[in-house]
Image (tube, rainbow, N blue to C red; front, side, top):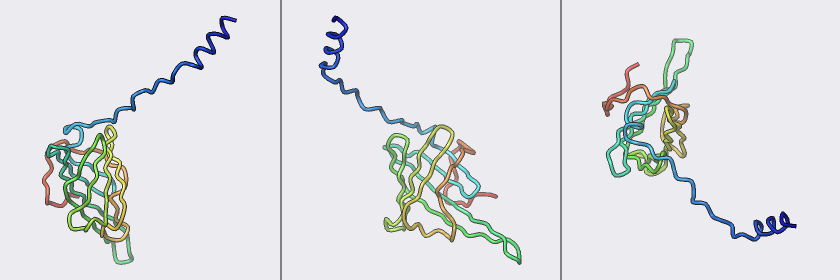
Length: 144
């Protein structure tokens, strides 16, 4: 009987709403530097006030009978970051392109939406690894 009373009391207790899980926040040291994948390089530098300077250089190589050639693409601008995710609307793209950068530990997960104007098969989307924490040299193409 006491067990039944306890069960009824538990059922009738008001439901406690737990606070929403807090978003992961990344530091400047975690995002600053150069990130690379097989098909691209992203340079990031924290500017303060939830803003990051970002540059992307992408490459898609393929072979033809006369040798190998590549398509290129690049984007740059100031991204707004909230928590662990930054949104870049590249300069000179008239808001037709959005690049989402999510910093997850040692990885940078990137997705792309819209028309970014890159060469055929070039995309910023993918998984990147940090290759340097030093301040990037913006405005220069990556070395091969």
